[in-house]
Structure formats: structure tokens, C-alpha cells
Amino acid sequence: MTNAPLNVKDLRDQLHTLATREGIHQWDLGASRGMNASVQVDRGEAKQMKAAQRSSITLRVWNEKGLVGVTSTSDLSPDGLEKALSGAYQASFFGNAGDIPGFSPLATAPIPELDRPLKAAQSIQTLLCTLKEVECELLAKHSAIETVPYNGLSEGSSERIYLNSDGALRHMQRTQASLYLYARAEEKGRKPRSGGAVRVALGSSDLDLTGCINEAADRTISHLNYQPIDTGRYLVCFTPEAFLDLLGAFSSMMNARSILDGVSLNNKDSLGQQIAVPFFNLHDNGLHPAHVGAASFDGEGTPTKRLCLIGNGKLENLLHSEATARQFGVKPTGHAGLGAKVSVGPDWFEVSHSNGMSSSADHLDHRHEQNTFVLIESLNALHAGVKASQGAFSLPFDGWLVKNGERISVEAATIAGDIRDVLNGIVHLEHDTVVTHQGVSPHVWIDGLAITGEA
Image 1 (tube, rainbow, N blue to C red):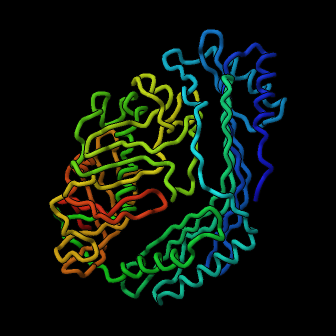
Image 2 (image 1 turned 90 degrees about the horizontal axis):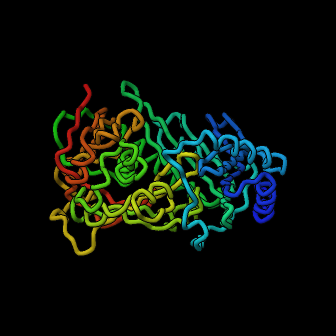
Image 3 (image 1 turned 30 degrees about the vertical axis):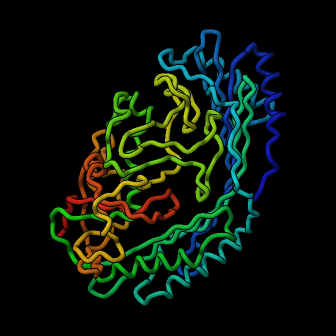
């Protein structure tokens, strides 16, 4: 599944010629296009087979007064580009004078080389046959697993470019595949229980199918013997996936755009302040070798890099676009989208323990701990149960109550708290980190979190 790559030099030359003819002196363009094939199955039969080709182009033009106009199109032909340039120029006279983006000063700086070889795609029929076999193996893992209601195997290729009138020329291609399995088990007189797993790779032939099957089965089976949990405050251990989900829900704490918009817990003066325990580190590392979807530059052409957000518990840096970096007096960090008001977002979180620091609870380990604690596997309803601007969360979860080394699945419960209390209440970060499909983190231990059992 590949297209002939775009000739970005020809595209830049076309835009330069058209812009000169229209009297436009400052412009930039961000574009992406991709092809994707995906399949879903239901009890050995095809449920959905889908292939799509998408393209998205954003063109910005600055007029003589410095105001910006933006157009979006999917037509990269000379005629389409001419219409987009003309439309953006006309729109620029209605631009917001109070928030004018500019070119990133790093848009022409060297970009990192990524070791992400492009993989040949398999046919959609091959994907379908593979997923049928995977579903069959998962159903055979336990007599109680009756269905795999949510599943999907997808594969695609994409390409991304950034050009501007100052000579920036960025271009990258990548391939990516993913497998998602979510099994449902039922026993007579008992509530249905579920568990899932995800795997990603550069190509579908590289996916860890067996690992995904076994993880989905183990998680589902482990929840069959469930019991209610008493309401109270507990010592809690978050799995890496669950903790990364919680951090992601509150990423506005480290987002300069959110701070300027007044929807973050932090403000301009928060930099350098202690916001977590001293042995806690958080980096945004879009270049991590395990990050399959890595990009070497952001929507504004700024190179991607590893950025320390929280170091030894202190807020050290924020995620920036060109516009927010200019207001803070720093350089862009490579986390921007593209538009009239540029969005800012994280790439790939990396949680780690500060070197040479002890948490005073090194005896804690989710595999061997004999005391009573709650092990949280996954958090649910993040879209509804998080108030990011206030720091509060109240989330249903899947997990186990662990007593004397025995895991007892929690029937239904909600965990609630404040992200500031969580970061400052960490009692231990396990030394072994785990690479997930969304980042890297160890198991994280926090004491005194409120859990409400549901009758």
C-alpha cells in the first residue's frame, strides 16, 4: 500500500511561482496524505473491511499588514494550489491581530534521522485471514471467552511535508500497523468480564500476534473471579498503561498553549516549581526507538527532540509552538500542529526514576508485594471523568485487590483524586520500565487514593 512519494521540490517551486504571481511574499504549507486498510471480524466472519486514502493540506498566507489567512484543501494540482493561495490571502484580511503566528525559527534547522524502515503492505484479504486466525486462537484460550466483540487489524502508509517561503523543506514517509483485541467472557450467574491488548509495529508482518492474544486472554481470565471492594483509601499501584493514560489526560499542565488560554493548572510562574516528588522524571520523547509513529518534525517544521518536562519533581519545560515559545521567550519544542491558532500536544511520554534518589519504599513490587493494595490495570471514561483545568478526576477502573500475593478482580469501582496529589503522593517508582504502545513507564505506587466500591 504505497503511493509514489510527493516531489516536494517541484511543489515548493510551484508555490513560489504562484505566490509571486499573486504578489504574496510570505506563506507556508503543511500537508499529509495516507492510505489505510483495516479489517474486523465476528466469530470467524468478516464484520468490516475498509480501505481509505486521505489527504489534508493547510496553507497559510500573510498579507501586507502581517495578518494571517488559512485555507484547507485536498488538491495539490497547480489549479488547486492557486485557488488555495487566493483564498488564504483573502481570508488574511479577517485574521486575528491579537494572535499572529509566524515561522518557526527552527524550520530550516537539521532534523534527526529516524531508523524507521518502510514495510511492504499485505493485502486486505491477508489481513482478514490473519485476524480470523487470531480471533480463533483467543476464543480457544478459555471456555468462558465467548466473543471478541472489539477487534481490529490495520495497516497503512503515510507521508508528511512542510514548506515555507523562507526555504524550509521537510518531507518524511512512514508505515504503521496495529492489532487490537478485546475479549468478553461470561459464566453462568456471573457478570460478563472483559480484557484487551494492543500491539503496534512498522508493518503487519512484524506484529506480535501471539503476545497480543495471550495478554488479552490473561487479562480477561484474571477478571472472572471478581468480588466487590470496600470503599476507602488504599495503597494503589498503577500499571504503566494506566499511569500514562492519567498523565495524558492532564497534559495541559505542561502545555504552553493551555497556560496562555487559562485552561491549565499551571501558569507562567510555575516553571521551576516542585509539582511532583523529587525522584520523579517525565520526558516527552517523540524520538524513542519504540515509538512506531515517530515524526522527525512537527506541523511547523520544528525538529522533534527529547524534552524534559519534569526533572526531579520540578516543572522544567513546557510544550511549545512557535507562537507560545515567542511569548515565553524560548525556542519551539517541536509539538505544534498547523493552523491560524496552532495547537500544541505531547508525542510520547517517558516516565523514569531520578538517578541516585531513593523513594524510601523500594520494597514495593507489584509481583511480590504481600501487603494489601489495589493494582489498577486500566482507567475508563477518561473523556468524561477528568476535569483537566481543575485537576480532578473520578474514573471507573479495571484492576485487582491484592491480598497476601493473591489477586482478586474488583467487581466495579471508581478511583478519584487530584492529579497534584497523585504526583506528590508517589511513594515508589519501580526500577523496571515497560514499553507500551503509548509511552514508557514503570509501575507507579501512590498511597491514600480514594476508591469507591459499587454495590
